[in-house]
Length: 584
Image 1 (cartoon, rainbow, N blue to C red):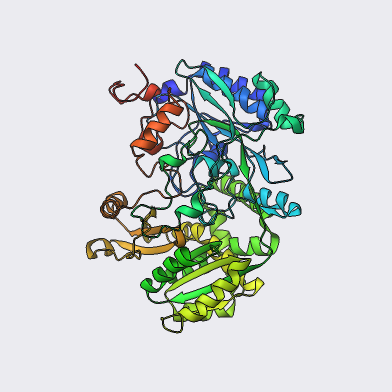
Image 2: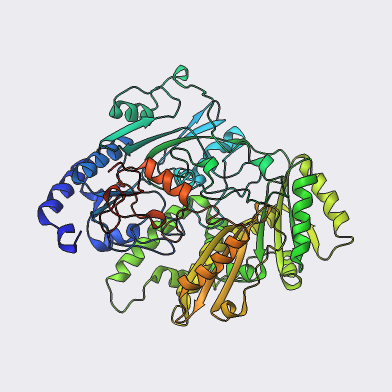
């Protein structure tokens, strides 16, 4: 579709007026400066959106979808927009239809089932909100604060196969959800697979769920999974030649789970887990990657009690996070996670107004916050800082209940004969270590913003190595190494999922370098992406592409994801439908 046809006046007036009638003028954004925070990716990617609508109820989402399907536009369902691969926003301009982004963040209800053993999370609900909701019940979420992004949504995690840092639970997954899809015939239909009797008419179903008018007898407990309840066994197989988890694992592609926005997901039903009675974090340092790998294999294959998680940081990540993640760290540490959505909203407002002034730099809020953060003293504990001086590789291992004593005894014995050391964290040190690790992902973006005149583009890789891989730490070939200005390695070490991020030197073709690196991973049996949406950074492999086409046969939602067609009915540029599965 051409630029002129995408902005046809009569089309604009008709659809814009209909969307405003549904959600109100205040929540229908059409000015480019107001839509930009939603149409630009958290780290990369972006394009133009005809409109951004921010419905306030499930029924309003449904009515917006009806209007969009009738107008034959592409819909991108968006929650927190914290994705790192551009998968929550438009990408470029070569679409054949206008794009409407439906932001769901106003709809953040969380409903408890069976005394909190399961929950129903609405489209805009967040892990932060879920954690607070569950605390009085002695339960905790399927996932914790995202290691690569902060403020992530529950539904977004399920749709993108995110999470998996918790080795006893695996990635976010459910077989119970409520969603809308466009059929092969172009009809919008609502599918209720929540396992809750809510009625038959779409608006009746959505209203009954929103208002929680259903009774206890209406809640069924079908033999469907609300989590990946096989993962704890899978991860123990340290000699398997496949990764423990990865984005396009056919085992875990089911309706909303892994759909990457190819469905309009209203709500998901997922399991929760008991908060451990006893809890201990161990901080481990070594200069030998083989030492870490041996510990990993021992803990997974011989421990009676699986650890909770094991977060890895290379010394370069430690330093970058310390300097460029400091403001996020301080906000969460001093004000709590509830302030994060407010901080993001304030940042968007500041950047929007700054963007109106030509003399103001882009990303002004980040620059301002970075300088302000440096006014505060060192925020990291002395024992961590001492380990930073001694060791290149840092591993934060969380244990619980009977696993605490088991890990303590193992580590004391292991380091009698192996290089490195460990200490048992105090409660405060544990909180500081984990938070330092969790602000790492955003720190690279901040570093780039502060040094963009001297640096090339960011290039990120999210890779899952086979469970039997021993040479996990990357040593780049010289011809690639000389093109890289900044390297940043961190990840979830128990499951061999690594976030390997780079900033290129000026003038370097990041895509070409990435292609070289990914080719080497293919030869080693690695899978990528490991836990992020393929977005517009990775090509969807056959299993994932087929799942997308089956889920969204008309290509009405999040078109172009994973390098797929952006055109209606999955055509290629010539109009050919062969191999697309649409039946045309």
